[in-house]
Image (tube, rainbow, N blue to C red; front, side):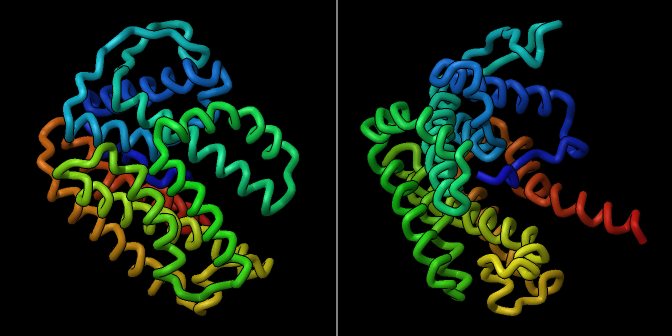
Length: 274
């Protein structure tokens, strides 16, 4: 994914930041078990959010452990490990594989092809464990290629491809909360796709690369931000419908503040140049 679904560290209490970091380490550890030390290269903030969300909703009894790893060799740190982090790691691998295949498709980058080949066996095993999620990711990449090739201008439909895929990823199990999780994933996915198009707007306009904002001649700062705000509001509405008490401060930090951090940094940079 793209790393937009992150915390706003400046607005998070120290205890909550440490707890978030423990989940992040838990997903990293799960990836390392599956892929070796290179596994952490696939680690994303987006799937760490999913681990925090699922453990908050289902209380999956994450186990706290003390770990040392390559980036943190001096002092041991807390790692929360269990079903939520394991699932997030598995989804990370599915997404990473298809992202590498997508990069190979777009640019024939040999590094992307090599990375995809390294993940292929693990990805195929996961596809048997999670056929619904694997098919959603595979269909997403195929439909996105079609949309880009046809240079489709339907902003809602194109962004909805990412939303549909992430909705299936967020749906951990079919139960009373599955449709709400799908809705949360759907609007989070649309936000991610549109945020990426927003950030790439100027470069894509110059290069002629596919960007639905550019093709629709949308005013980036005015209408672009309005559209992103609408997607974020729908995601927040779905989140608030879930009966979550555990990890609530972390999750609300991400949903209401963290997803905007990259944009705020960009604004700060522009102000410094004035």
